[in-house]
Image (cartoon, rainbow, N blue to C red; front, top):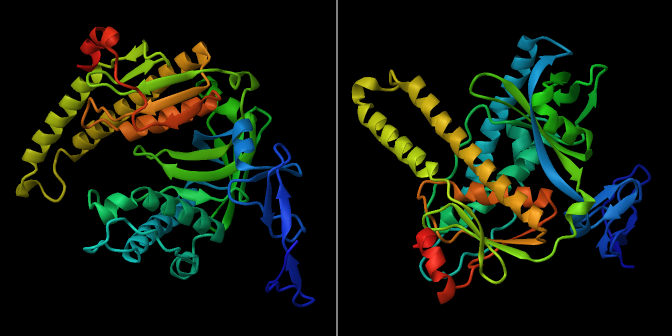
Length: 413
């Protein structure tokens, strides 16, 4: 056990801090760590502690899956709607401004591509928390930490396209940016009528919000009752003015969903959305979704014609702004519904056939304006719910043999 000098500001003075070992209670994996105030090991990134038992990242994800449950807010119980909206307005404004500031700073302090550099260098670590605390004092400290981690992950995911290939620009966070609440700053319970109640700190006040329940939200209510470790809470507002809460937490996996065998290879096609093959390269399942090209073509045509009608006389706000926004929201809801439906069909098929691994390849793109990234994300989430391992492959399906070429020509060209 190695000993190190550390500046521990205890009332008694400075002390020596020793490295201790964090051991996973499932697989026995060991990792060096430092003790916290309770003289317990500080957990590495991805490790979890549940009832004095430590889990490594792999063992934890095998037992639990991360889920997000969204509920509309029915009424505030510790104040009026006017007081709640005033506190939320302050938090949304500060969160939106802080998110845009952090995104801009990450880009401004990053490297730049210059002649002679063939590969993008790694990004230097930037600690923005002290500056954000000074610029946005109304935001809670724990909310700033959660927001910084979210913005950093968002920027790192698109860093190559922003600073290296210049294929995209920085995203702009628009008001109302959802207000994050740290997992230590909120809790939930059910009242006498079996209705969910959330207690959270919003600004300088502690609020109790009653969430919507009933048969329509039976899936969310069941997940809330099974939530083992609460995560982050986010409070936002929809376009119709409804305030919502997104409760993120870890739910236990079903034990009977982790005993599958075999690999299901899934790929996108040239004239179909998804196709599934077995290990012998025989096509087993197909999702055409012929309505998607029609929806996308209709959306493209209407968007172009509305853009042509947006003349100088119609600026800054055109007379058809409400109709245009409604049309855009309708298209987004359509795409979201289609993605969720296709991912559910694929996951149900893989679970019913008893597959343990799902290899996904989206190198073939049938629809140019379809959000394939959201489809992949939804399939990954659905497979994790069923205990199926998701693997992203550059080319998961080998070349189709001559015996099967005639069967797949009408689907893949």
